[in-house]
Image (cartoon, rainbow, N blue to C red):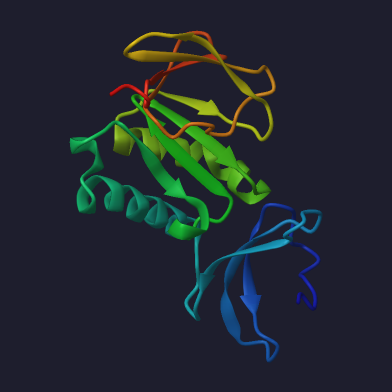
Amino acid sequence: MIRGSSPDAKPGDLVAIYDKDDRPFGAGLWNPKARVPLRAIYHGHDPFTEDDFIRLLDRAVDLRLTTLGLPEHTDAFRVVHSDGDALSGLIVDRFGDVLSVSTHSLGVYKRLPQWLKHLHDRLGTLSTQPTTTGGTIVPSSLTDELLQLRVSERGQRNPLYAYWVLTACSTTCCCVNPFRR
């Protein structure tokens, strides 16, 4: 339960969190109009700064690149998995040289330009494709090797977790046929 907030805290701000005895408890992203008004990012007594977000992004990237070695096997994988990487409200998938980004937090959205530049530098990716909730996909053609899908104008939210390559037309994508034997 949130007892109160500082009157100068604006939607999207990084704020300090205190326990019921006013002791430091952590940090989070504040948006009083959201369904989840306080997204806790860090639990602890030490201060959490904007630079710590970059450290969390690096930790997520290092897990996928170094620890798991995903690029040795595929160029399509989840780079950031929201709360699983302590970055509540941010999902980033890599499909070749494209990052597919979904945000569920105003605080995350406000920081995206800086974070995406950092991710592109780390991953060697070239562009970003935002995703939205809703929308549908329908098959547009099927060959022995390639399944072509058309995404509705309303967008998509990672309907297939396979090898995606976004073409010049932002509403068309290609996927290796997962049903081929």
